[in-house]
Every structure is written in C-alpha cells, then in structure tokens.
Length: 258
Ligand SMILES: [Mg+2]
Image (tube, rainbow, N blue to C red):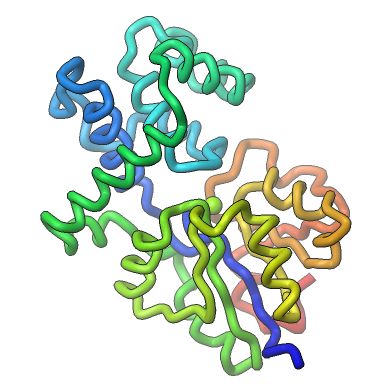
C-alpha cells in the first residue's frame, strides 16, 4: 500500500533564498582553487550584479564557483561582455571557462563543499543567517500535514548542508535528497514507486521541462515557483504540464491548485 501523498520541493530558490551565502562560498571556493593567484578579500562581500543575474542559469553548485572565477578574470567573456552575453550561450561559456583553467566540475564542487564545511565549523550561526526562507513558505509547509499530505526536498545542494538549514527553520520533511542521490528525474522516478506524488515545485524551468518530457514522469503535476531564481522569460508560454505557482496560490489549499 502506498503512503500519504507527497509534495516535492526544490530547495534553493523555492524554500530558501541563500544568495549572500552562494556568493561568499563561491568566491571563497574559487580563491581556494586558484591558490594564491587571487585574494578573496579583494573581492566584494556582497554578490556582484553579474552573479545575481546569472543565478537563474545555475544548475549545479560548482557553476557558481566558475562564475566567481569568470567575474574576477579580467579578459573573460563575462567581465568583457556582461551577464546577458554570457547567459545567451551559458553552457558553451561555462565549458570554455572550465577549459581555460583546465578545471573539472567535481573539483569545483569539492572546493565549494569544503568551504561550506569550514564556514559551518567556524561559525554555524553566521552561516545559517545567510539563508532566508521565502515569505510564507515555512508556514505553508507546516500546514500540509493538515491536508493529509507529506512533503520532501529534492535538491542539487549537498545533503548535509540542506539538512542544517532545514533544521535551523525547524522543518522536517518526510524525505531529503541532495545531489548525492542522483539527478532530480532519477530521484522522482524512485519516489514515484513508493508515493502518490502530488506535485513537484521547482524554480528551474529546464528541470520541469525534463520531467514533463519523460514519459515515466509526465503524470506528475509540475509547478514553477515564480518567487525563485527565474530567467526573464521563464513565466511566458509555459508548456502544458507546467503550472505557474505564485505565492498567493501556494497559500491556498492543495485542492485548489491548478
Ligand atoms: Mg532552485
């Protein structure tokens, strides 16, 4: 017999806004990988405009480290031509940036996670306070139980970091999956075997498009969280199967969701 229905949430950009942390950890990881080539203290503490603007394109944490590296590299396409130019060919520009320095994604991901671990060891409260829940989301998650629904988190963030932040906000999802568990479609497929999936709330449109294109997953209701890190045209002409979720709809009973 299947368990209670399960509503699945992405983490960054859906539950939590961690922009100050993404930047600090990315720039510190970047300077660590660059060794003594750059001094992180020479970089701003606040996220630069280019970093904020490119965040909606980020799929994996390591890309943020790469973006920090491109922001500080004087002749990079990003510093020369700006964020719009970079985002127009985001994948190709990331590949080129990796090649320029002969970097591998897993090396940048490890650097990011090392920096985060060190930060937490040194000052956990400070680290946690760099993350803010989006308005109304915690309250809504805590109401789901009254509607007979459980919820889960599926994220590309590391599991341990996700757990730290959820604990800080006293949130206790039924399940939590970090990038270690595989891609989001893989995790959804696995969850679908055990739960009646009520929906998947995510702020990365490309991920939702992958889900609706997969015939094993296309019965899942997909919701694009419009309060998250969205590209300028993400809300326009959504394909059938992806519903726009606004904060006011999130606040309504599940039965009234599109
Ligand atoms: Mg997200």
